[in-house]
Length: 207
Image (tube, rainbow, N blue to C red; front, top):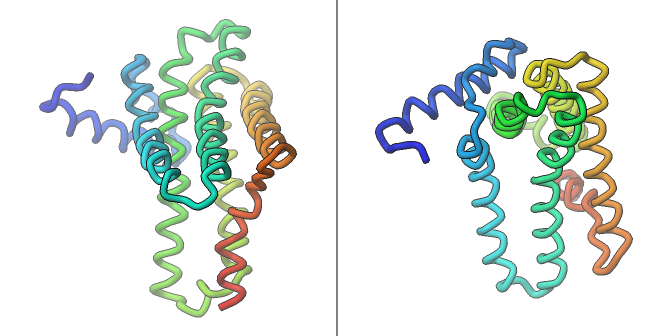
């Protein structure tokens, strides 16, 4: 665990590393530690959200559906670690994997923060634009494209592999996630992820 006195410095390094990697600078990887504790700290914020969701399951009318969403989110959270570790071990990059997966996990928040900032700026500068369904669709598309590039870049930098291998690695993570989403939709209670993703745009269109 990180001592209390070291936490501000550790947080500063993490934020610096995220910003550097987000801008395509390889030196950002050195800001992350390659330890089990560091990886656990990277997972902690998302696990905290899932813990809150687990508590709320008991307050929802459709408890089975909510529990399915929670379990699916938990599986999707750990898929990148499972898939990328298998590739890293196969390619002889296992010693680099912990630092890479720690950086990759933290960098997931970059896309969230960028999307949030863009939405806030649009609502302040162009209020009419934020109510257009096309804006939300464009924002989702751009965010998804940027996330794919960023994860590809972090994989290439963190594991010291070529662009093709980095693309294969991240493509495998996406494929495994899609398989889980497909299984969730196929089997009861038939949770369709795309409906939740499109819900904000549908609400804006109705308003």
